[in-house]
Length: 106
Image 1 (cartoon, rainbow, N blue to C red):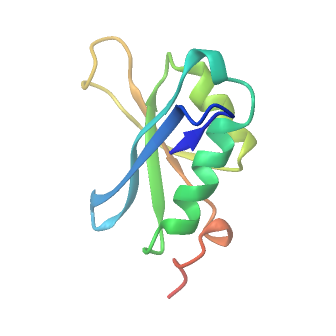
Image 2: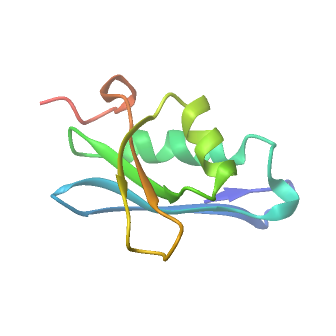
């Protein structure tokens, strides 16, 4: 969780291991008032440091341009596209570079 100077939460992320027993960021949220200030990048870095598997994935709808931009700026690579979850808005999957994972090396 990230906090602003008044100690109120401005964002959070969730890391799970139910995606083929690999790390998966199921949620990354930043309050609208705190966006474009580095909070998302901080949250991604925290998840990368906490991940205990060799691979870390996440996904976003094709229409979600802000998270796609954040992931691309952080060096994550698009690795797949899945149709059928949200009608008319495919899900784009991303993979974190293994060099950014603190504990993922075999």
